[in-house]
Image 1 (cartoon, one colour):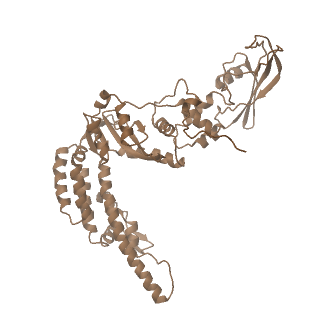
Image 2: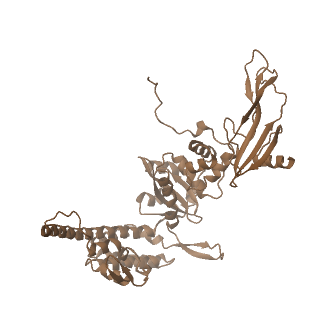
Length: 481
Protein backbone atom coordinates (compact mmCIF):
# COMPACT_ATOMS: atom_id res chain seq x y z
CA UNK A 1 0.00 0.00 0.00
CA UNK A 2 2.96 2.34 0.63
CA UNK A 3 3.98 2.22 -3.04
CA UNK A 4 0.37 2.78 -4.10
CA UNK A 5 0.16 5.67 -1.66
CA UNK A 6 3.14 7.41 -3.24
CA UNK A 7 1.96 6.72 -6.80
CA UNK A 8 -1.57 8.01 -6.19
CA UNK A 9 -0.25 11.14 -4.50
CA UNK A 10 1.87 11.82 -7.57
CA UNK A 11 -1.07 11.26 -9.93
CA UNK A 12 -3.29 13.63 -7.92
CA UNK A 13 -0.46 16.14 -7.39
CA UNK A 14 -1.16 15.82 -3.66
CA UNK A 15 1.32 17.83 -1.59
CA UNK A 16 -0.51 17.54 1.74
CA UNK A 17 1.82 15.89 4.29
CA UNK A 18 -1.07 15.12 6.64
CA UNK A 19 -3.04 13.07 4.08
CA UNK A 20 -2.93 9.29 3.61
CA UNK A 21 -4.41 7.04 0.96
CA UNK A 22 -6.30 4.58 3.13
CA UNK A 23 -7.99 2.55 0.39
CA UNK A 24 -7.42 1.78 -3.27
CA UNK A 25 -9.41 -0.84 -5.19
CA UNK A 26 -10.76 -1.58 -8.65
CA UNK A 27 -14.29 -2.87 -9.11
CA UNK A 28 -15.46 -3.38 -12.68
CA UNK A 29 -14.77 -0.19 -14.63
CA UNK A 30 -14.40 2.01 -11.55
CA UNK A 31 -11.30 2.77 -9.50
CA UNK A 32 -12.00 3.74 -5.89
CA UNK A 33 -9.54 5.87 -3.90
CA UNK A 34 -10.02 7.00 -0.30
CA UNK A 35 -7.90 9.85 1.08
CA UNK A 36 -8.09 10.70 4.79
CA UNK A 37 -6.70 13.64 6.76
CA UNK A 38 -4.78 12.73 9.89
CA UNK A 39 -6.08 14.31 13.09
CA UNK A 40 -3.87 17.09 14.46
CA UNK A 41 -4.08 20.05 16.78
CA UNK A 42 -5.83 23.00 15.11
CA UNK A 43 -6.02 26.58 16.35
CA UNK A 44 -8.48 29.38 15.58
CA UNK A 45 -7.01 32.04 13.27
CA UNK A 46 -9.37 34.64 14.82
CA UNK A 47 -8.87 34.31 18.59
CA UNK A 48 -6.09 31.72 18.86
CA UNK A 49 -8.18 29.23 20.84
CA UNK A 50 -8.00 25.54 20.11
CA UNK A 51 -10.41 24.07 17.58
CA UNK A 52 -12.30 20.91 18.37
CA UNK A 53 -13.66 18.37 15.89
CA UNK A 54 -17.39 18.14 15.28
CA UNK A 55 -17.00 14.84 13.47
CA UNK A 56 -15.86 13.49 10.14
CA UNK A 57 -17.26 14.58 6.79
CA UNK A 58 -16.80 13.03 3.35
CA UNK A 59 -16.48 14.74 -0.02
CA UNK A 60 -16.41 13.36 -3.58
CA UNK A 61 -14.46 15.76 -5.82
CA UNK A 62 -14.54 15.70 -9.60
CA UNK A 63 -11.32 14.13 -10.83
CA UNK A 64 -11.03 13.00 -14.48
CA UNK A 65 -7.25 12.50 -14.38
CA UNK A 66 -7.32 8.81 -15.33
CA UNK A 67 -8.34 8.90 -19.00
CA UNK A 68 -7.93 5.13 -19.47
CA UNK A 69 -11.53 3.98 -19.85
CA UNK A 70 -12.09 3.73 -16.08
CA UNK A 71 -14.28 5.94 -13.94
CA UNK A 72 -12.57 7.40 -10.89
CA UNK A 73 -14.32 7.69 -7.54
CA UNK A 74 -12.39 9.67 -4.92
CA UNK A 75 -13.57 9.87 -1.32
CA UNK A 76 -12.01 12.56 0.87
CA UNK A 77 -12.44 12.04 4.62
CA UNK A 78 -11.84 15.11 6.75
CA UNK A 79 -13.23 16.88 9.77
CA UNK A 80 -15.38 19.86 10.56
CA UNK A 81 -13.85 22.18 13.14
CA UNK A 82 -15.30 24.72 15.60
CA UNK A 83 -13.60 27.20 17.89
CA UNK A 84 -13.66 26.14 21.55
CA UNK A 85 -14.13 29.73 22.75
CA UNK A 86 -17.72 30.51 23.68
CA UNK A 87 -17.30 34.06 22.37
CA UNK A 88 -15.98 33.00 18.94
CA UNK A 89 -18.19 31.58 16.17
CA UNK A 90 -15.39 30.51 13.80
CA UNK A 91 -15.91 27.17 12.00
CA UNK A 92 -14.09 25.49 9.12
CA UNK A 93 -13.53 22.19 7.36
CA UNK A 94 -10.31 20.46 6.33
CA UNK A 95 -8.87 21.78 3.05
CA UNK A 96 -6.77 19.92 0.47
CA UNK A 97 -4.02 21.52 -1.57
CA UNK A 98 -4.96 19.66 -4.76
CA UNK A 99 -8.62 20.83 -4.74
CA UNK A 100 -9.66 24.18 -6.25
CA UNK A 101 -10.81 26.66 -3.61
CA UNK A 102 -14.60 26.75 -3.51
CA UNK A 103 -14.84 24.04 -6.20
CA UNK A 104 -15.23 20.28 -6.41
CA UNK A 105 -12.54 19.95 -9.07
CA UNK A 106 -8.93 19.02 -8.52
CA UNK A 107 -6.40 21.62 -9.69
CA UNK A 108 -5.38 19.55 -12.71
CA UNK A 109 -8.85 19.87 -14.28
CA UNK A 110 -8.31 23.45 -15.61
CA UNK A 111 -5.05 22.39 -17.27
CA UNK A 112 -6.75 19.37 -18.85
CA UNK A 113 -9.55 21.59 -20.14
CA UNK A 114 -7.07 24.04 -21.64
CA UNK A 115 -5.24 21.19 -23.36
CA UNK A 116 -8.55 19.90 -24.78
CA UNK A 117 -9.30 23.37 -26.15
CA UNK A 118 -6.40 22.88 -28.59
CA UNK A 119 -8.84 20.91 -30.72
CA UNK A 120 -10.88 23.65 -32.42
CA UNK A 121 -13.53 21.11 -33.42
CA UNK A 122 -14.50 20.39 -29.80
CA UNK A 123 -17.30 22.57 -28.42
CA UNK A 124 -17.70 23.82 -24.82
CA UNK A 125 -20.37 21.23 -24.22
CA UNK A 126 -18.27 18.30 -25.44
CA UNK A 127 -15.34 19.34 -23.24
CA UNK A 128 -17.65 19.99 -20.28
CA UNK A 129 -19.18 16.52 -20.59
CA UNK A 130 -15.74 14.93 -20.86
CA UNK A 131 -14.55 16.48 -17.58
CA UNK A 132 -17.91 16.55 -15.78
CA UNK A 133 -18.07 20.34 -15.43
CA UNK A 134 -20.39 23.06 -16.72
CA UNK A 135 -20.12 24.93 -20.03
CA UNK A 136 -19.62 28.16 -18.09
CA UNK A 137 -16.72 26.65 -16.13
CA UNK A 138 -14.98 25.65 -19.39
CA UNK A 139 -15.42 29.16 -20.81
CA UNK A 140 -14.22 30.92 -17.65
CA UNK A 141 -11.24 28.58 -17.23
CA UNK A 142 -10.04 29.22 -20.77
CA UNK A 143 -10.44 32.98 -20.48
CA UNK A 144 -8.57 33.06 -17.15
CA UNK A 145 -5.55 31.08 -18.36
CA UNK A 146 -5.19 31.99 -22.05
CA UNK A 147 -4.45 35.49 -23.36
CA UNK A 148 -2.16 35.37 -26.37
CA UNK A 149 -0.18 38.38 -27.66
CA UNK A 150 0.34 39.13 -31.34
CA UNK A 151 3.48 37.74 -32.96
CA UNK A 152 6.13 40.06 -34.43
CA UNK A 153 5.48 41.16 -38.02
CA UNK A 154 7.48 39.20 -40.59
CA UNK A 155 9.13 39.89 -43.93
CA UNK A 156 6.03 38.73 -45.87
CA UNK A 157 2.57 39.10 -44.37
CA UNK A 158 -0.82 38.07 -45.74
CA UNK A 159 -4.04 39.92 -44.89
CA UNK A 160 -7.60 38.75 -45.42
CA UNK A 161 -10.95 38.97 -43.68
CA UNK A 162 -13.13 36.19 -42.34
CA UNK A 163 -16.83 36.37 -41.57
CA UNK A 164 -17.40 35.94 -37.81
CA UNK A 165 -20.46 38.20 -37.26
CA UNK A 166 -19.47 39.16 -33.71
CA UNK A 167 -21.87 42.12 -33.74
CA UNK A 168 -23.69 44.32 -36.28
CA UNK A 169 -20.63 46.61 -36.41
CA UNK A 170 -18.05 43.79 -36.39
CA UNK A 171 -19.07 41.22 -38.96
CA UNK A 172 -15.68 40.71 -40.62
CA UNK A 173 -12.52 40.08 -38.61
CA UNK A 174 -9.08 40.71 -40.13
CA UNK A 175 -6.57 37.84 -40.08
CA UNK A 176 -2.84 38.59 -40.38
CA UNK A 177 -0.57 35.68 -41.30
CA UNK A 178 3.16 35.13 -41.60
CA UNK A 179 3.39 33.83 -45.17
CA UNK A 180 6.72 32.06 -44.67
CA UNK A 181 5.77 30.05 -41.58
CA UNK A 182 1.97 29.95 -41.88
CA UNK A 183 1.62 31.18 -38.28
CA UNK A 184 -1.23 33.56 -37.49
CA UNK A 185 0.29 36.83 -36.30
CA UNK A 186 -2.98 38.23 -35.01
CA UNK A 187 -6.74 38.57 -35.51
CA UNK A 188 -8.41 42.00 -35.33
CA UNK A 189 -12.11 42.27 -34.54
CA UNK A 190 -13.06 44.59 -37.41
CA UNK A 191 -11.74 45.88 -40.71
CA UNK A 192 -13.13 49.38 -40.11
CA UNK A 193 -10.62 52.17 -40.74
CA UNK A 194 -10.69 53.44 -37.13
CA UNK A 195 -10.00 49.98 -35.72
CA UNK A 196 -7.17 49.20 -38.16
CA UNK A 197 -5.59 52.65 -37.71
CA UNK A 198 -5.50 52.13 -33.96
CA UNK A 199 -4.11 48.60 -34.34
CA UNK A 200 -1.32 49.30 -36.83
CA UNK A 201 -0.19 52.48 -35.10
CA UNK A 202 0.10 50.58 -31.81
CA UNK A 203 2.89 48.51 -33.40
CA UNK A 204 6.33 50.19 -33.32
CA UNK A 205 7.36 51.86 -36.57
CA UNK A 206 10.62 49.88 -36.67
CA UNK A 207 8.65 46.64 -36.69
CA UNK A 208 6.32 47.84 -39.45
CA UNK A 209 9.28 49.00 -41.53
CA UNK A 210 10.63 45.42 -41.53
CA UNK A 211 7.72 44.24 -43.73
CA UNK A 212 8.75 43.95 -47.39
CA UNK A 213 5.69 42.32 -49.00
CA UNK A 214 2.00 42.59 -48.18
CA UNK A 215 -0.31 40.04 -49.85
CA UNK A 216 -4.03 40.81 -50.09
CA UNK A 217 -7.07 40.67 -52.33
CA UNK A 218 -8.27 43.64 -54.40
CA UNK A 219 -9.72 45.46 -51.37
CA UNK A 220 -8.36 49.00 -51.75
CA UNK A 221 -7.78 49.75 -48.02
CA UNK A 222 -5.50 46.68 -47.76
CA UNK A 223 -3.54 47.75 -50.83
CA UNK A 224 -3.11 51.26 -49.40
CA UNK A 225 -1.60 49.88 -46.18
CA UNK A 226 1.78 49.96 -47.95
CA UNK A 227 1.48 53.75 -48.21
CA UNK A 228 0.09 54.36 -44.71
CA UNK A 229 1.82 51.86 -42.44
CA UNK A 230 4.49 49.85 -44.30
CA UNK A 231 6.83 52.31 -46.02
CA UNK A 232 9.26 49.64 -47.23
CA UNK A 233 6.64 47.11 -48.44
CA UNK A 234 5.15 46.51 -51.86
CA UNK A 235 1.60 45.31 -52.43
CA UNK A 236 0.92 41.90 -53.97
CA UNK A 237 -2.52 41.07 -55.39
CA UNK A 238 -3.39 37.45 -54.75
CA UNK A 239 -3.83 35.66 -58.09
CA UNK A 240 -6.72 33.57 -56.74
CA UNK A 241 -8.87 36.68 -56.25
CA UNK A 242 -8.24 37.89 -59.81
CA UNK A 243 -9.52 34.59 -61.22
CA UNK A 244 -12.37 34.72 -58.70
CA UNK A 245 -13.36 38.08 -60.22
CA UNK A 246 -13.57 36.49 -63.69
CA UNK A 247 -15.54 33.48 -62.43
CA UNK A 248 -18.01 35.74 -60.65
CA UNK A 249 -18.70 37.63 -63.88
CA UNK A 250 -19.02 34.39 -65.86
CA UNK A 251 -21.48 33.00 -63.30
CA UNK A 252 -23.61 36.14 -63.67
CA UNK A 253 -23.70 35.64 -67.42
CA UNK A 254 -24.54 31.93 -67.04
CA UNK A 255 -27.48 32.84 -64.82
CA UNK A 256 -28.75 35.22 -67.50
CA UNK A 257 -28.64 32.40 -70.03
CA UNK A 258 -30.41 30.10 -67.56
CA UNK A 259 -33.23 32.62 -67.16
CA UNK A 260 -33.71 32.56 -70.91
CA UNK A 261 -34.12 28.79 -70.90
CA UNK A 262 -36.32 28.95 -67.81
CA UNK A 263 -38.60 31.36 -69.68
CA UNK A 264 -38.81 28.83 -72.52
CA UNK A 265 -39.71 26.10 -70.00
CA UNK A 266 -42.42 28.35 -68.57
CA UNK A 267 -43.79 28.95 -72.05
CA UNK A 268 -43.75 25.20 -72.69
CA UNK A 269 -45.69 24.65 -69.45
CA UNK A 270 -48.39 27.13 -70.50
CA UNK A 271 -48.74 25.46 -73.89
CA UNK A 272 -48.99 22.03 -72.24
CA UNK A 273 -51.73 23.21 -69.86
CA UNK A 274 -53.69 24.74 -72.73
CA UNK A 275 -53.39 21.55 -74.79
CA UNK A 276 -54.43 19.24 -71.95
CA UNK A 277 -56.84 21.64 -70.22
CA UNK A 278 -54.98 21.03 -66.96
CA UNK A 279 -53.34 23.26 -64.38
CA UNK A 280 -49.84 21.76 -63.93
CA UNK A 281 -47.64 23.89 -61.68
CA UNK A 282 -44.30 22.45 -62.77
CA UNK A 283 -42.75 20.78 -65.74
CA UNK A 284 -39.65 18.62 -66.16
CA UNK A 285 -36.56 20.77 -66.71
CA UNK A 286 -35.33 20.96 -70.25
CA UNK A 287 -32.19 19.19 -71.37
CA UNK A 288 -30.48 22.57 -71.84
CA UNK A 289 -31.31 23.77 -68.34
CA UNK A 290 -29.96 20.56 -66.81
CA UNK A 291 -26.65 20.96 -68.66
CA UNK A 292 -26.35 24.64 -67.69
CA UNK A 293 -26.86 23.80 -64.04
CA UNK A 294 -24.59 20.77 -63.67
CA UNK A 295 -21.68 21.37 -66.07
CA UNK A 296 -20.53 24.88 -65.15
CA UNK A 297 -16.96 23.63 -64.89
CA UNK A 298 -16.70 23.95 -68.68
CA UNK A 299 -16.44 27.73 -68.29
CA UNK A 300 -15.15 28.03 -64.72
CA UNK A 301 -12.19 25.65 -64.66
CA UNK A 302 -8.77 25.61 -66.27
CA UNK A 303 -8.90 23.53 -69.47
CA UNK A 304 -5.68 21.78 -68.46
CA UNK A 305 -7.33 20.55 -65.24
CA UNK A 306 -10.23 18.85 -67.03
CA UNK A 307 -9.75 15.09 -66.80
CA UNK A 308 -11.27 12.58 -69.18
CA UNK A 309 -12.59 9.69 -67.09
CA UNK A 310 -14.00 7.86 -70.07
CA UNK A 311 -17.55 7.55 -71.32
CA UNK A 312 -20.16 7.21 -68.59
CA UNK A 313 -23.90 6.77 -68.76
CA UNK A 314 -26.01 9.74 -67.68
CA UNK A 315 -29.48 8.67 -66.55
CA UNK A 316 -31.05 12.12 -67.02
CA UNK A 317 -29.88 12.60 -70.61
CA UNK A 318 -29.99 8.83 -71.24
CA UNK A 319 -26.74 8.57 -73.15
CA UNK A 320 -23.04 7.81 -72.70
CA UNK A 321 -20.90 10.93 -72.43
CA UNK A 322 -17.24 11.82 -71.89
CA UNK A 323 -15.62 15.17 -71.08
CA UNK A 324 -15.42 16.18 -74.75
CA UNK A 325 -19.15 15.54 -75.21
CA UNK A 326 -20.02 17.63 -72.15
CA UNK A 327 -17.85 20.52 -73.33
CA UNK A 328 -19.40 20.51 -76.84
CA UNK A 329 -22.98 20.38 -75.49
CA UNK A 330 -22.31 23.20 -73.02
CA UNK A 331 -20.64 25.50 -75.55
CA UNK A 332 -23.55 24.99 -77.98
CA UNK A 333 -26.02 26.49 -75.50
CA UNK A 334 -24.96 30.09 -76.14
CA UNK A 335 -23.04 31.68 -79.02
CA UNK A 336 -20.74 33.57 -76.62
CA UNK A 337 -19.75 30.55 -74.51
CA UNK A 338 -16.82 29.44 -76.77
CA UNK A 339 -15.33 32.94 -76.72
CA UNK A 340 -15.78 33.23 -72.95
CA UNK A 341 -13.95 29.94 -72.42
CA UNK A 342 -11.13 31.00 -74.73
CA UNK A 343 -10.66 34.44 -73.13
CA UNK A 344 -10.71 33.01 -69.61
CA UNK A 345 -8.12 30.41 -70.56
CA UNK A 346 -5.81 33.19 -71.77
CA UNK A 347 -5.60 34.52 -68.23
CA UNK A 348 -5.18 31.01 -66.76
CA UNK A 349 -2.18 30.42 -69.05
CA UNK A 350 -0.75 33.82 -68.13
CA UNK A 351 -1.24 33.16 -64.42
CA UNK A 352 0.62 29.83 -64.57
CA UNK A 353 3.57 31.15 -66.55
CA UNK A 354 6.34 33.71 -65.96
CA UNK A 355 7.80 32.02 -62.89
CA UNK A 356 9.85 34.62 -61.02
CA UNK A 357 9.66 36.81 -64.14
CA UNK A 358 7.68 39.98 -63.31
CA UNK A 359 9.10 41.81 -66.37
CA UNK A 360 7.79 39.15 -68.75
CA UNK A 361 4.48 39.11 -66.87
CA UNK A 362 4.21 42.89 -67.24
CA UNK A 363 4.61 42.72 -71.00
CA UNK A 364 2.06 39.90 -71.37
CA UNK A 365 -0.41 41.65 -69.04
CA UNK A 366 -0.36 44.72 -71.31
CA UNK A 367 -1.24 42.44 -74.22
CA UNK A 368 -4.12 40.86 -72.29
CA UNK A 369 -5.48 44.26 -71.29
CA UNK A 370 -5.53 45.23 -74.96
CA UNK A 371 -7.24 41.95 -75.98
CA UNK A 372 -9.90 42.18 -73.26
CA UNK A 373 -10.61 45.87 -73.91
CA UNK A 374 -11.52 45.05 -77.54
CA UNK A 375 -13.69 42.03 -76.65
CA UNK A 376 -17.36 41.89 -77.69
CA UNK A 377 -18.23 40.55 -74.21
CA UNK A 378 -18.96 43.41 -71.83
CA UNK A 379 -17.55 41.91 -68.62
CA UNK A 380 -14.19 41.19 -70.25
CA UNK A 381 -14.03 44.88 -71.14
CA UNK A 382 -14.67 45.58 -67.45
CA UNK A 383 -12.02 43.01 -66.60
CA UNK A 384 -9.48 44.91 -68.69
CA UNK A 385 -10.16 48.01 -66.54
CA UNK A 386 -9.69 45.95 -63.38
CA UNK A 387 -6.38 44.57 -64.65
CA UNK A 388 -5.24 48.07 -65.54
CA UNK A 389 -6.21 49.43 -62.12
CA UNK A 390 -4.41 46.70 -60.17
CA UNK A 391 -1.66 46.10 -62.71
CA UNK A 392 1.34 46.66 -60.44
CA UNK A 393 -0.01 44.45 -57.65
CA UNK A 394 -0.71 41.65 -60.14
CA UNK A 395 2.78 41.94 -61.64
CA UNK A 396 4.29 41.84 -58.15
CA UNK A 397 2.57 38.49 -57.58
CA UNK A 398 5.07 36.96 -60.03
CA UNK A 399 7.91 37.68 -57.59
CA UNK A 400 8.80 34.31 -56.07
CA UNK A 401 10.44 33.55 -52.74
CA UNK A 402 12.37 30.47 -51.62
CA UNK A 403 11.27 27.83 -49.16
CA UNK A 404 13.20 24.89 -47.74
CA UNK A 405 11.41 21.55 -48.14
CA UNK A 406 11.28 19.63 -44.88
CA UNK A 407 11.84 16.25 -46.57
CA UNK A 408 14.76 17.04 -48.90
CA UNK A 409 16.03 20.25 -47.22
CA UNK A 410 16.32 21.77 -50.69
CA UNK A 411 15.27 25.33 -51.42
CA UNK A 412 12.42 25.62 -53.92
CA UNK A 413 10.74 28.62 -55.50
CA UNK A 414 7.37 29.54 -54.03
CA UNK A 415 4.90 32.05 -55.38
CA UNK A 416 3.56 34.57 -52.89
CA UNK A 417 -0.21 34.27 -52.59
CA UNK A 418 -3.03 34.11 -50.08
CA UNK A 419 -3.43 30.37 -50.65
CA UNK A 420 -2.38 29.44 -47.08
CA UNK A 421 -4.69 32.16 -45.74
CA UNK A 422 -7.69 30.88 -47.71
CA UNK A 423 -7.03 27.42 -46.30
CA UNK A 424 -6.81 28.75 -42.73
CA UNK A 425 -10.01 30.80 -43.04
CA UNK A 426 -12.00 27.57 -43.11
CA UNK A 427 -11.11 27.08 -39.41
CA UNK A 428 -12.75 30.24 -37.96
CA UNK A 429 -15.68 29.87 -40.36
CA UNK A 430 -16.23 26.30 -39.21
CA UNK A 431 -15.83 27.36 -35.57
CA UNK A 432 -18.51 30.04 -35.97
CA UNK A 433 -20.89 27.55 -37.58
CA UNK A 434 -20.51 24.82 -34.98
CA UNK A 435 -20.82 27.39 -32.19
CA UNK A 436 -24.11 28.62 -33.72
CA UNK A 437 -22.81 32.19 -33.61
CA UNK A 438 -20.16 33.91 -31.50
CA UNK A 439 -20.36 37.11 -29.46
CA UNK A 440 -17.18 37.34 -27.33
CA UNK A 441 -14.39 38.32 -29.71
CA UNK A 442 -11.56 37.96 -27.18
CA UNK A 443 -12.59 34.37 -26.50
CA UNK A 444 -12.89 33.57 -30.23
CA UNK A 445 -9.52 35.18 -30.99
CA UNK A 446 -7.70 33.33 -28.21
CA UNK A 447 -9.40 30.02 -29.03
CA UNK A 448 -8.38 30.20 -32.70
CA UNK A 449 -4.81 31.32 -31.92
CA UNK A 450 -4.50 28.70 -29.16
CA UNK A 451 -5.48 25.92 -31.56
CA UNK A 452 -3.25 27.13 -34.41
CA UNK A 453 -0.02 27.94 -32.52
CA UNK A 454 2.16 25.03 -31.48
CA UNK A 455 4.37 26.91 -29.01
CA UNK A 456 1.77 29.07 -27.24
CA UNK A 457 1.81 29.19 -23.44
CA UNK A 458 -0.69 29.94 -20.69
CA UNK A 459 -0.62 32.72 -18.10
CA UNK A 460 1.58 31.99 -15.08
CA UNK A 461 -0.91 33.84 -12.87
CA UNK A 462 -4.48 33.27 -14.12
CA UNK A 463 -6.78 36.26 -14.30
CA UNK A 464 -9.65 36.60 -11.86
CA UNK A 465 -13.29 36.23 -12.82
CA UNK A 466 -13.74 39.97 -12.46
CA UNK A 467 -10.90 40.68 -14.90
CA UNK A 468 -12.37 38.47 -17.62
CA UNK A 469 -15.92 39.80 -17.22
CA UNK A 470 -16.98 41.46 -20.47
CA UNK A 471 -20.71 41.92 -19.86
CA UNK A 472 -21.77 45.46 -20.80
CA UNK A 473 -25.52 44.97 -20.53
CA UNK A 474 -27.77 47.28 -18.56
CA UNK A 475 -27.84 46.75 -14.81
CA UNK A 476 -30.82 44.77 -13.67
CA UNK A 477 -33.55 46.81 -11.96
CA UNK A 478 -35.51 46.07 -8.82
CA UNK A 479 -37.62 42.95 -8.80
CA UNK A 480 -41.35 43.66 -8.78
CA UNK A 481 -43.67 41.04 -7.34
